[in-house]
Amino acid sequence: MKVLLFYSFAAFTLWCLADAKFFEFTDCTKKDGIAEVSQFEVSPDPVDLLKNMTITSHLKILRDVPIDARLRTRYYKLRKVFGIDIDVPIPCLFGKFGSCTLRLCDYLKMFRDQAEPFYPEGVEYGCPVKAGDYGGDNVEVEIPDITAIGRYIARGRYRTELELVVNRKTEACYRILTELK
Image 1 (cartoon, helix red, strand yellow):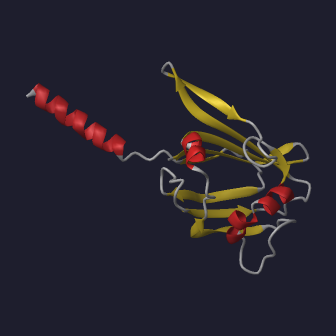
Image 2 (cartoon, one colour; image 1 turned 45 degrees about the vertical axis):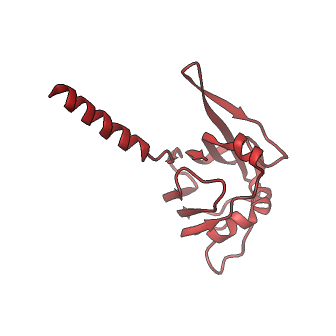
Image 3 (cartoon, helix red, strand yellow; image 1 turned 90 degrees about the vertical axis):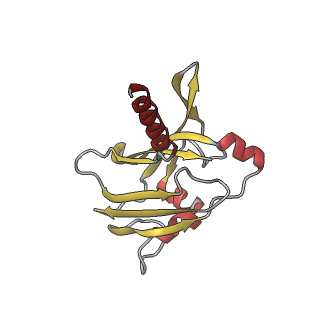
């Protein structure tokens, strides 16, 4: 009976893990931040590099974002080396991908196609970013076509840290765990 119970538990655990989701969003903003995120979800989970993804996001910008605000991004590929979890930093590539620090206005120009659908109707896209409600439900975001080799290299689990910095002070902070397949 104990053996049957053990195998039943093991089968149930494997079934749960097979359908486990990896995506996780954390707001790490301190008090008096410039924004509040009430929802941020991505599907599918894991993200399929051959298909577009959908994002549901609701963000309240509490006060106007100064034009000189900077977006600091840090990306890490999560790897196991000899059974130990290692965060491998991804450098800034081509001045916009990976771990970069950019003026928010420049970032918005470079990623207009991905970010513009989250602007409220009637609000001009770009800088300055005005206080208000931003986001959308099930917004389809196109994943750029990359080669098979690119997909092979990109597959895996990632940790992302995003910080909005104004006058050397972090005004917003978010951490995201995601998996690409």
